[in-house]
Length: 358
Image (tube, rainbow, N blue to C red):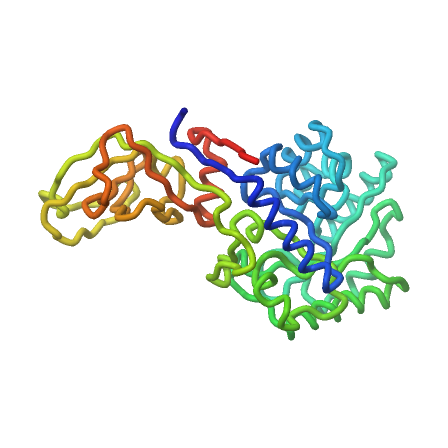
């Protein structure tokens, strides 16, 4: 076995996504499964394609290309606003995209005509998180511009994002303003929009039963919820989902008793920080062959009793193992759970082996 190792339990994720689909179906809400958090492994995409998700959503067009080439037969959505340089591929490969710029829409419209291909877009609204989106009071002006686009570029609906950039959480009030934005566009276009995509994992899983979403909300884009069973923006785990979806394993390459306070003048570490260490006397510590180049260390939580993370360099993770009941030795494997940032970084790293179990 090659370490460090990210062990992914697809069966647990399948359980989570099915619970989410079932729960949201009670409110007439469909689910797009977001694959980008785990860097879109094909093993995950194949599993999700066998569920009742209505689309697979990713932020990278190259991942959508890989899924299509693998023969996965579901609609695909690009959820990062398209770059002008990739519009040809977006129209050719994706079924949906999220758009927040009229110039981009115009280019996409022309590309649809050029390829003689239909493509659906969600018009993004900014409800305060200050990432992508038109302002709500632009609805009428936006609709006027949409009328000029080719019918091949289908205006399927509207979308909104919360939590990812500024930490803003959705509320009933912001959801109602979002719905009003869509209804103003509908009034100008003279037809109903099919999709009101009311956000992602942020608060949706823990507040679905509390009346957060007006009836017009009929779609959510869920990633972290099924991948980790958590909602990082709200700082909670979701009680009706499982959190044992994956763990990171790393190998001990040194075990030695050492002082807890460094010896000598302390300057900045390799990342420009001046570290502080409490003097706790001599304690047993281990070095694991994994570091900041492999994973966001701050997103790791030890799963082995008594293990405490001390610090890390680019290639080494230092842990206190004095209080472990097991006397660890060089070659032993320690395990860690991951938050979203650790999942994202370790799944992207070419130095971390990945195993997908089902």
